[in-house]
Image (cartoon, rainbow, N blue to C red; front, top):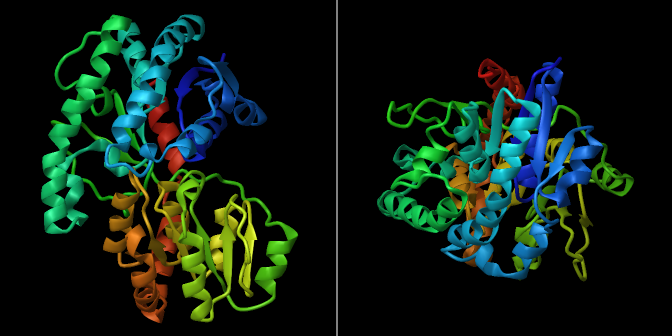
Length: 404
């Protein structure tokens, strides 16, 4: 009988797809992945042939996030997201994980860093657990902030203990309700002291020192799928019909708060003579000439055929652009995106442009990036990333080593 692993994640496609890639890698290594998931996400999991257990009521989180800017644009977005999304989910996830452990006897519980209900249930049952961090900033470790300017480094260093204390206060009522022992520092105990600590990014993107206080972090590599998808015929025809374009996207949630982002960006690009591919579900009125808008495109297929990518800095699109070997202009909206932007800039293959300053700063950013020197640097980095071990397979191999 194949050993089994329980997996749990919650959020946007940027939170779901890395776990799908990880589950596929586990299955390739003769391990049975079993998901504990938001019922809303069951169809995509079942399309890949995974067994999936619904947790709670079906919840369209993208609609929730799009309904209120506090979940993305607010300085307190992390607090709002934890309080309104992850805590209610973990209240249901904790007993669901306990029941699943009893039923399937998994060798390891593998969960998103903020699916703390699964982590607490694994600890209670004595089952090894792996914490999956999808972006470096979620570790809240001070050694991450070397890429920040001096003032930003100071502010982030001061913010770490404040953020940890805020999390401790937020989850205390939940711990009491579930009967989970609460103590000061529960954030660190839950998120950075597991049996296995996995970072789903390349060490080239976030080279981290290892501290015995923090445990050993394994930076496995970006979690891209092994397969690629063909581009729709209209996009393929556009790419073939002229010069190499710039790709512009805001991913799966930032587009809800785009404001004038697309219009401003397209205006700058068209004025510079660029052709543009826009990937967005938001209808764009009066699309300029030399531009094409599509609701979806596989980044792994599209980005290598572009000269640059302008994006919001979600870790998925960031990893895709770096791996494709093309420069990026990163316009962060919230959460981990500014941290990712600063890392791209530190690699000298991209520029961070503040969202509110895009009209003024985008032309200079493009001028600096679209040079032969930057193109060669980005291309070399892309080749190195593509030659590195596969991220999901690396993570799956480490998980298998934890199997009881």
